[in-house]
Length: 123
Image 1: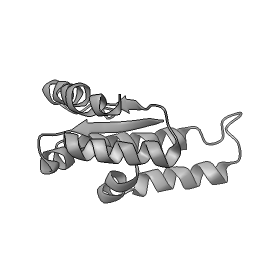
Image 2: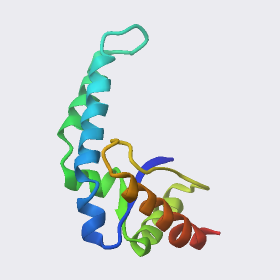
Image 3: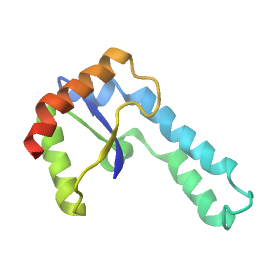
């Protein structure tokens, strides 16, 4: 499974710091879906139109609760364990900045938290 992941030193930071970038990401996904409408091999337009509309209308709260894993190290350990157990996963692909707008230092901090505090609990 591929999922955006962001680790912050506090829950507030983990929620607020990536907000603009992840909102941009989902708007961009909606636009990519719209662009594919009517192209050969894209299938019937109805489902794609619905998907584009759904992506474009996601609130930040919906994104946080259903589309990403953002939190402190402890929260990520708990949430990723639930995702692993519920879906029977053996691993995930963590997208650290899918929107491309998170400062490099914050991306490095996320990677550091993931590799030093989160991933070791799954070994």
